[in-house]
Image 1 (tube, helix red, strand yellow):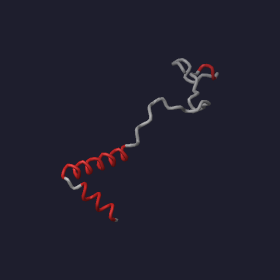
Image 2 (image 1 turned 180 degrees about the vertical axis):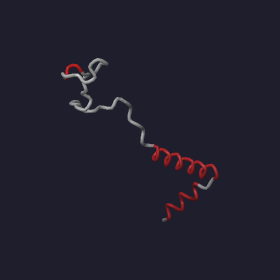
Image 3 (image 1 turned 90 degrees about the vertical axis):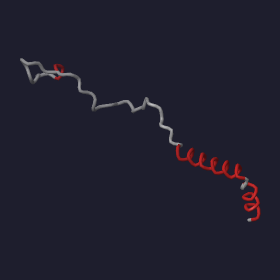
Image 4 (image 1 turned 90 degrees about the horizontal axis):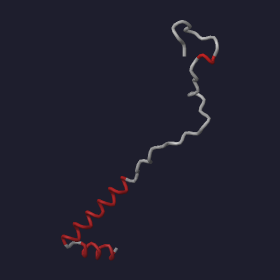
Length: 70
């Protein structure tokens, strides 16, 4: 780092170490991985809700018979 009396230092040792461009260690993220199963979760919730409505309305036995006849 330079000072006011000598803005351009002669030796490299007079400046701050600028080693952020030479990273020898591999990058390892510290943060947690983001949960990426949301689409699957929404599909399962939708299937559950549809089946719950069919079961509650009494249409489930007719649907099961229709699937069995195919």
